[in-house]
Length: 88
Image (cartoon, rainbow, N blue to C red; front, side):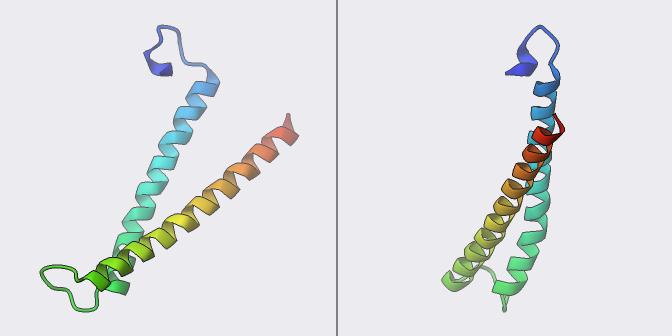
């Protein structure tokens, strides 16, 4: 791991670390928004536990958001890479 070396981190290592931290932060933010939305959509009568249809609905709802998030992230990263190649 780059941080465990005795030499200072180079720019690429720092950028990679920043990207990882941003990706994690974005994912956590997405989850904080998805959970209430999926819960509101799928749990019509809150009780002491979720029935199987509610559980299935929540899983499908969260999966849908996760797939969309992944698609947007991949598209954005591809765009950044294309732009950085044209700037070089």
